[in-house]
Image 1 (cartoon, rainbow, N blue to C red):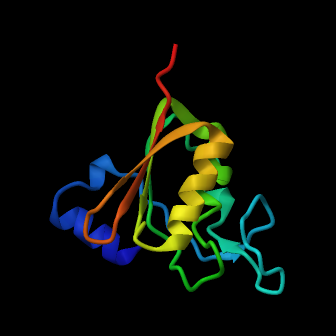
Image 2 (image 1 turned 135 degrees about the vertical axis):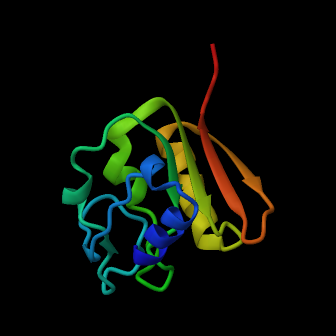
Length: 131
């Protein structure tokens, strides 16, 4: 969090970003974690409660070694707070776990999914523009 805030300040972007930092805690909601012996962890939902109408969600944490499928809770935790034009970007999709998460989110929430071959890969989920 501190590193991100410093970078935002250095780039004079802090007024464009609502950065919220919290310690990881047990997550009991929807998850892909296949190992019930390894507790799923994610950020405190309490720090997100007043967020509304999200247009872009960039998912780049928690670190992959936190727990299996550590980034999965991002969308379930905020799914009711998304704008109708939401885009969800998942970093590090050169890894299978992040691709698995994107695939699940695409099916479960009805997103179109594209992958970009940037340095570590990017999964881009967008709202279907059908009919």
